[in-house]
Length: 325
Image (cartoon, rainbow, N blue to C red; front, side, top):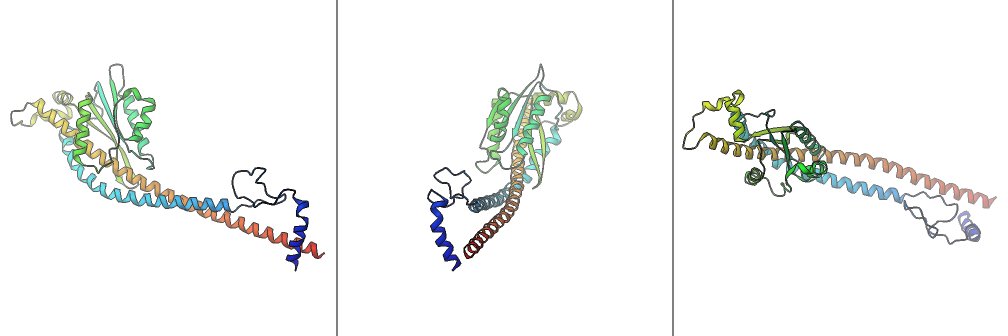
């Protein structure tokens, strides 16, 4: 009886309350125009906006979980190759050494990065170290150039060091990495770049949550011969007996080219492992953050819905009491 009476009274007094036709209340974050305004006195408690937000967060959480699984699958495939490739460059380090502090006139910084993002700060770390090496090896009689592998390092270095970039190679991981592919890239770099020392900057993989920025140095045959004649770490080269008709300079040339391709192969694989590990960590963190946000939105939605129901009940009871009184 009270509800029927309330509806009758509402229909009778509706023209007096609102001269405009009563329209449905829109749950849009955009402020309503004059045509879309609701009746005067209606409280805008929108749960539709919260529901849409919850749906968006759930979709994002599904995407980040899927990306984490894909990164884990790729990591397992690349990690075995990276561990096997470590045996390629270690004999060269034992024979020719790794001299990052050698003083040369022409230096080339080979910065290895990823083509895609969402993998933490591994690319920014490589770029920062590359800039530091460039600054240390710059001077009035010195020349330092960049060779960039990957879109992310290209995007960062091209802004303030465009004139120092000698060569850019992208889409390196479009196909599965193998030694033939990397050796072709190494040969392309050796043909187009003049250098006394190549400094390869990459992220060495330790675990899914740990990677170490690393610099490997490959010297040109002339610098290797100069350092060997002056003694020091490379002075033991004269103790080896050379067989065949090749001269010492030709052997050092072949060794330098093979060393560069082996170090490049290992560096690219190590950086790919670090990229996938960092992406796994980033996507896991994103999924957990999405879960926390979903919990907060669910609490907000329930509170808003309860407040709306309570307000409607109070209005109904107040109207019924007023009619009965």
